[in-house]
Image 1: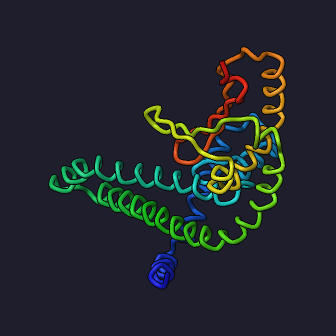
Image 2: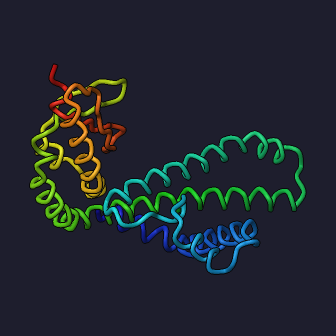
Length: 235
């Protein structure tokens, strides 16, 4: 933690906050260039509230921070790839007696790319710190949702539960394990899916010979939660 704080201070001394403002300004100018046909309110909404590699989604707690970390990783990979691809071009230019304009262009490119990589590292450290601070609050926010879901008889008693992993591997899981492992975003999805569950339960009761009535709900790490009505599994 101390090393991270020191690292952040070094980046701030190097002017990373000013560079961040510059990149947001550049983003704004670029987006506005392609949105001249839209009114100012719509432009403002897109700029400030549409999640992308610069703007983090909100409303799902730690899950939003973890999703944004993927954007940071993507941005970093682009910067590193750009630097690697440019090495032969820069080397070739430098060994062929470049003029002052070419030298300044190379310096500008290297500086911009380096600061972009630093910015991603800076954001990643800050997000990791935010995740650690949010963990207690996340647990408090999850508790009412978990209690509410545990009271839903249609959810707890009428379904078989499996987790489907990559390569179509499946493993049985209990409702308590599901709720305990779920993050806040997943619990919200489960809650919103209760109506769908009830509808399928009703269909299953009215059609006892029905089979394959699965409900696929997203979980973390590219897994899928499969709920199958128990009556549908009986022969």
